[in-house]
Image (cartoon, rainbow, N blue to C red):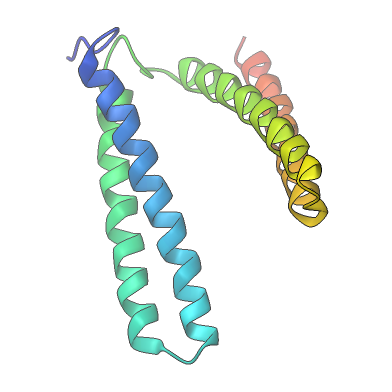
Length: 133
């Protein structure tokens, strides 16, 4: 269908996915805070944005999945996710070190937890790949 491998369009799809996913998560979390603050109208608007952004992100993923040179099968998707989790864990560890150096221990502890979670996800995804073989 699409020949996305090594194209600028592929990079753009991944960038768009990152932006839409980030916006969706942020809007969802801000909606929770708006609810706690007694602002139901703001919460509803934020949830609507979160839902719309999640839909946009899904549309971008559809292009990446459909491409024969992209995430066309389960193993390719799992392998991509494993690589991403490894990079995320490494990044979170570096962020935690920076936070500790800036005497932000609570932030550092949270970032370490995120790194641990990414490592756990990497192991689970690797096991799933092995299950396919």
